[in-house]
Image (cartoon, rainbow, N blue to C red; front, side, top):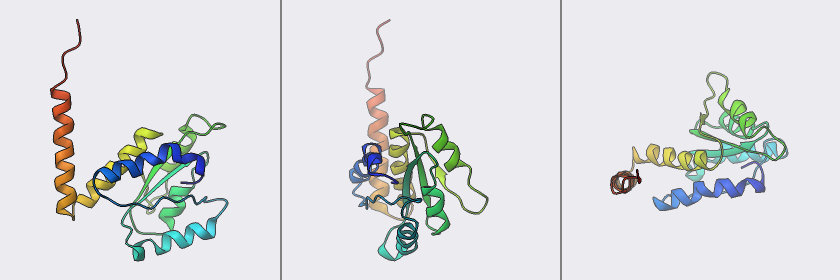
Length: 155
């Protein structure tokens, strides 16, 4: 994430990955205030065993795009609201408008996007890991059953 203040939303990524037994690193690295650190982090990610980067950013939201420019690993971007921003729409537009050849999978603004970024990362990892695949299928079945078990609304 680009700022420590983003942790309130981005902690949902770690919490969701934890449910599937997927480890994660959580770092604050600003694309604007620490560009060399971000470059080093992204370029060394694969060698450290990282398979997917999930980047949350607000305002100019450069973090996901800069990360994608420095690695061929999948990068998922979570647009975040900022107190002086445009309700996250500025971040959404910045992240989703990547030039051809440098993709960033862009999710919804805020906590729903953070959770879905973790879910998408889980689905990607499940393609090559039977244990994660089984856990994901179990989660999806339980989620469906929760809805099926809901009583109808009072009419």
